[in-house]
Image (cartoon, rainbow, N blue to C red; front, side, top):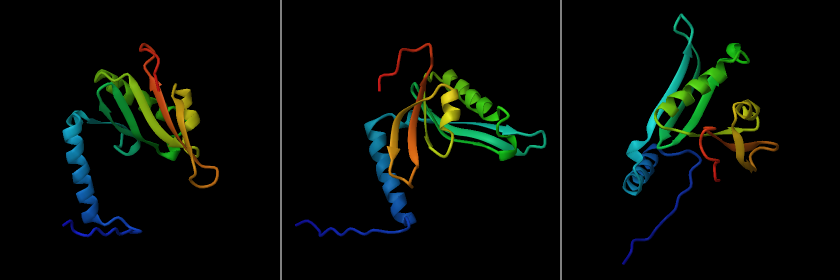
Length: 149
């Protein structure tokens, strides 16, 4: 006979349970696909003093590059640093064989900035706070065939 099942809901994420879920999902993914080929990628901007004033963090897998985080210190915004970080990040990913670049951004973040860099919003998700939407954006290397999503 099967053991009875109980479900619990938490307002916080218990660390031990989170580790078990992450491990279980990681084990499944490792068996299902070549997850071991996912590689982290980052690019940072520093002053001569060594102070960090911007960074791009993400990962590559096959032909795909995901930009997960982009940040520029407010003092250095609107001076081209964000563009330089993204382009350098993309160049490093292209050197790994990537030609598909994607990210997500909220409506209060940087959609127009990414559009200027050639990204297109392919999915819009509403239902967060009033007036807030999340956009999944993609850019393909212009030398490649059109994206089929």
